[in-house]
Amino acid sequence: MKKASAALTLIVGLALLLSACGTQPAEEGPEPCPTCPPTGVSTDLGGREIIVPLDMAYPPFSYADPETDEPTGFDLDFWNAVCEELNCEPNFVTASWEGFFEAMEAGEYDVGEGGLTLTLARAMRVDVSMPYVEYGQVILKTAGDDRAAFADEETFVASDLTIGTQIGTTNEIAALKMVADEDRVVSFETYDMPVVSLLAGDVDSVIIDEVSAVGFMQQHPGELEVAFTVTGGEYLVIFFPTKSDLLVPVNWAIKQMFEDGTMDEICEKWLLRPCTPE
Image (cartoon, rainbow, N blue to C red; front, side, top):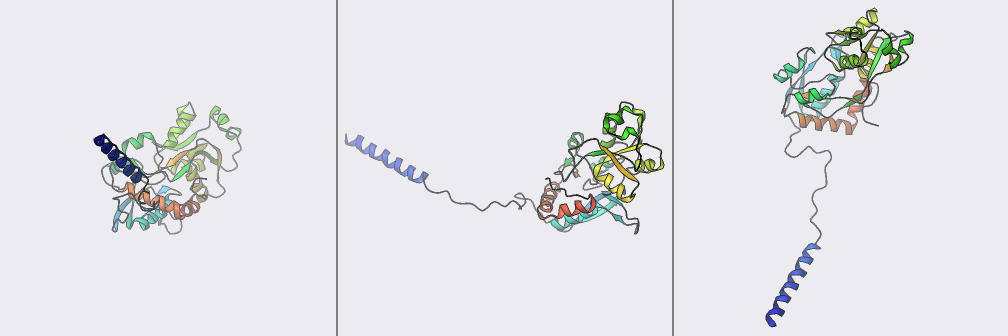
């Protein structure tokens, strides 16, 4: 009996000890830091050069200032702000859309910028950043063109009006999906040529990103206007060569720019609206 009593006493004592340990408050850790970079990721690139390609025929993202002939646009302000966050130096180089992804994969560019839309095919090929602009595609027409076909998308599709676009872009994909007759879609090598052709009367309309339509309308005040919206809910992202060590720091910098209002300042300047989601 004494042995049993002693064992019972030991069990009860252990239970009380465990119970007491379980009621002790957990030691508090450091406060969460929503603006801190991920563990092990440096946000100081030590003045590193970042090669940023610019398509100089793509307002409002990158184009030649008509007064100074110097490069200007959204992309330059964006990357200067990113590098202010990350202590890097953007090196802007002129590039063309043709062969762009191949050049980036080969290491000629550190990033892919300039109104590039997120698609599954592209995301499977290279790395992509968090989205920084949400937009839709629109049909652009010359101001005052009141032909009935421009009333809405259904009426436009039923017409025989031609659509200018740039070859190999999401705009071209959307145009080919919208109309059954491929002969109505006129594709050009550079992004500015569809608008040039529209103004010259060689095509009836242009399908274009809403954010780019703003840039061209600013360049040609009173000459262009939006007929109707074709798509919505599309996203602009930055592309990186696969496994780039810039992906995480640049994502962090973009978040910082949204937090402190820098991103909306750039968007309001070049896109005439903020980019922070409502």
